[in-house]
Length: 191
Length: 191
DNA sequence: CCTACCGATCGGTAGG
DNA sequence: CCTACCGATCGGTAGG
Image 1 (spheres, chains in turn yellow, orange, green, cyan):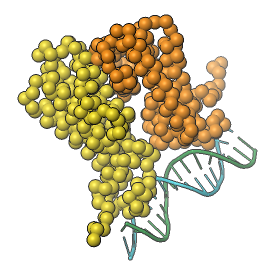
Image 2 (cartoon, rainbow over the protein chains, first blue to last red):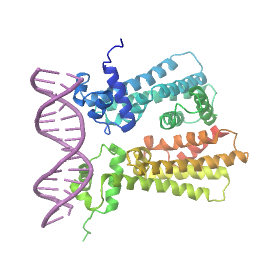
Image 3 (cartoon, rainbow over the protein chains, first blue to last red):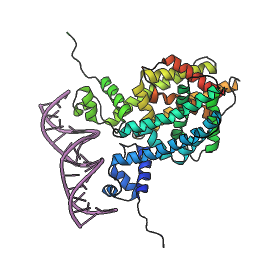
Image 4 (cartoon, chains in turn cyan, red, green, yellow):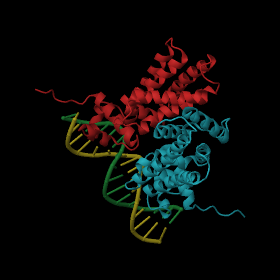
């Protein structure tokens, strides 16, 4: 009655994200990955061409979510403070809902072969630029005190990017509450 | 005339810190490490008993510096705001002056075998508790607005622990300036 | 998707 | 600190 389970490429990429984020890229073997999927390590090569490609695939998923958020917020007509609020809320939700891809994107990109490594670092830079731009406009509009926008962007992203290190789903605070707390904390620093 | 260079255990631990922090523990082989010291990989075992022990040694150096800072600040008679300022300045200086050990302590501890791994995580917890305690006392003294102290400690440490990801010695900002910027940013969030 | 296997590399040891 | 080496494991391929 129940459909026979069949491993798809999506299953492989998801499982790889979990292992890469927990044990690191170099701490994960193809046999480990096969093991959690109930396959031999060599069988994975029916779905992918190599371990490096698998890493790129996981990281690209993470990158796409953050870039999608930045594009959406930047193209809106909201004032800068609302935009910053949207960036923070969106970022928290991405980390909460897709923690493996987010962690791999943030922590394992350095193990990508060139030129992919450089490309991913550029994507992270573009994401940071989105924050910087919103902050700059908010200061220009008199919403926040004057500070170096680049430094403020780094500080805000420091708080957001550390989320994956301590966030636990069973925690008392909902993702929404957490986003509000972070927004208030960082705008306190901007005021 | 010049003394013959001779590799000491300290050289080995320092070089290991550099490689572990740059390439990760599992991305560094004993032969890699020997290579940067001008030795064969097998020669390293005259100085150490194993790769795991080497990781513990690097991490212990990082842990000791942070714990030393926390002990010193907590035992002082300064008011909470001065204590927080001292913690932040001390933390910045540790990261700036000993970035390899700090990064390895922060990022590679999960690869330690048990029970060392748990012990190091407890040290990190104790370090966070120091921040929490200072924040709690500052709030009780009316220096800062009431917020959950644990959450504030996490946010402040998020900014501090992200330092190793972007700090560059050739940057325009001196470590002292940076510490002031961080203090103002996070106390803005506390006010 | 498995079996059988490849050459390369891993952490580590023996003996000097 | 090196040479010579160990068994284990690595990413990956051939063939079915």
